[in-house]
Image 1 (tube, rainbow, N blue to C red):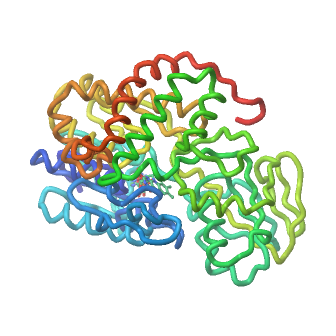
Image 2: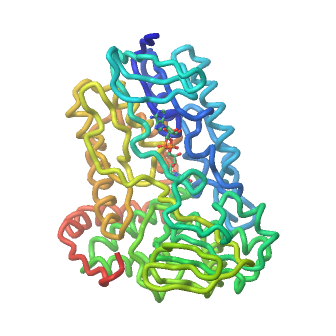
Length: 467
Ligand SMILES: Cc1cc2nc3c(=O)[nH]c(=O)nc-3n(C[C@H](O)[C@H](O)[C@H](O)COP(=O)(O)OP(=O)(O)OC[C@H]3O[C@@H](n4cnc5c(N)ncnc54)[C@H](O)[C@@H]3O)c2cc1C
């Protein structure tokens, strides 16, 4: 069978849905989304039970449908900050988004349909229910919304061996398995491992029953600086701190010292050099709790888990049958290299403004609707890959600052941004009367030019052995 459509969107995760939602709000295009999974929502279908958004719900999802009520949490690690949806709430939300899009009559969502590549008459797609092959002819464009597909512990291929009598579970199984273990070894340096440790501590596991294998140390954003709406002044204060640090830094180490000093970035162990940055955030409360865990293993990555020992790149540690090993080692965000986003007949959805995945996908939908020339679209939307290291942070921030300066000359785009719920700075104009916000804006404007110049020539003084 041949299906005709204006846009074929491959991937019905957050990116594909946010792109389609924004495109159909601006055009009468017909859009077909396909996904090989049974439901829309991407990796959120495999969220571990205690996963929440690390950023506020207020600016996550698609443009046309709010997520949550913009409430301020009254207790817990997120106290005083805007609410963050649970994995289940995000899954449910994307289900509602897909129904809403289909309800417009412009969108068709085909789940359990896998994209196989080019076919003789268009894009080849397999219906995973029946096995039938279809050709999809995209009259306008094919939109690759799985280029940055996430890798999560529930579905990734474990990067280490496990002997049959060792106890290892993916993080998703931790709540079910925790009761039968007397101690825990959490594997991974990133946000998932931090979540697993926080969950154990919140469930009254004493810190000395937790061992944490952290091959690298990570920088975390402080959640204070990512609060929108009535707290948008904090975002501006964070941006001012970033540009102030960047404008004066003498090298990469000095830059991160300044960012830590300002409170913008944190690491769990201030005595250990941190070289990893993945754009995730923690609150001060979470950080304090995690600092109670003293048994941190820094012997590189895990190669093998046996019944009585864990073998790592640079050594081994004893273990036992009573220890539950918790796999939190998946990559998370994809490290795909940058390529032009707008190509003849194709759009490859990627990051533009740092750490704003759903805003970016929606932005691309808007730009596709309103500009004709691919080179203009690419000028407004240069790809900005996710960061993995401290050196990436400098590239990522510079690119955002540069791109946002280019946007200031585009009234149509600025108009859309001022209305978009996905724009974390959307409430800024309403808060410019506040003294703190105003001085942060002034500081940002004074420092962004020097910061861009300085970051371009910044020597890399990363301590050896910490990449
Ligand atoms: C654990 C975790 C928590 C996150 N939390 C936040 C947060 O709090 N705030 C934030 O801003 N960002 C967050 N992110 C980053 C980002 O917002 C999300 O990862 C986002 O959901 C990514 O959506 P996506 O559509 O790009 O990718 P995915 O969710 O990976 O979706 C890609 C889809 O493409 C489909 N697909 C792939 N290949 C094919 C094929 N050949 N044919 C058909 N379908 C295919 C897959 O089945 C999948 O459904 C988080 C990321 C992770 C991993």
